[in-house]
View 1 (cartoon, helix red, strand yellow):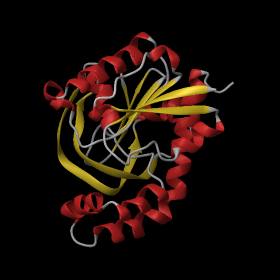
View 2 (tube, rainbow, N blue to C red):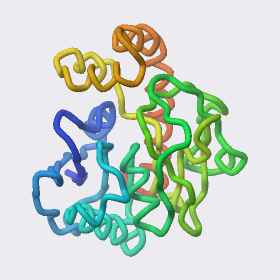
View 3 (tube, rainbow, N blue to C red):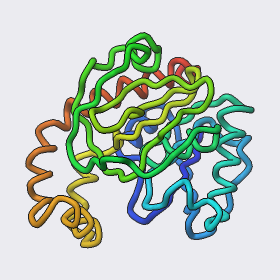
View 4 (spheres, helix red, strand yellow):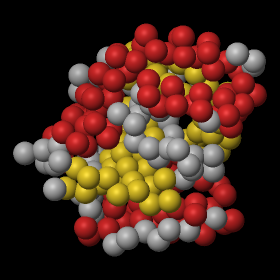
Length: 241
């Protein structure tokens, strides 16, 4: 069996639909609750790194010692080991920050369903092969990548956010959008008052029900796009033989 190292930054967060993909490919996830002080295990025993979102920001690293260790692990994994990496939202920002890019507050935050479009470079990149030119995705972010690391390729953008997805060669990908969200993910928010309250602070009263109504019919297409990105990465890196 292969193993995925999952960096977690808050309760009730998980790789969502990627867990189904992992199961099909015989990849067992091992989550590390970084914000609670869990140590990062030796990287040699893992085949893939998956870095989740969170309420933290990259520029808080001086106040969060565990984030310094996390970014060092990301650099080792992506640059020195050149092994498969997937980062969503904060995981996307950490990838860029760890490799020398710049992350700051977004000029316009995106919370809900938004369109993203493949860049010219993205349409030619193997990690975006078969991805629709424009797609609707789930967003929940207040920060963004302002400058990508040297050598990175911007795969997608949106009207409000220039860097919606980034690739490092063909072994690492970050998405600002939440490609891991599933109907189960969103349905579970109904039992998490803090999630619903946070959503309504941004989008107003009744935002949760409205977002469910908008997003649920779009989930099959979102799942297909995520599956394509995952398959591209797994095949490009040789994890599926």
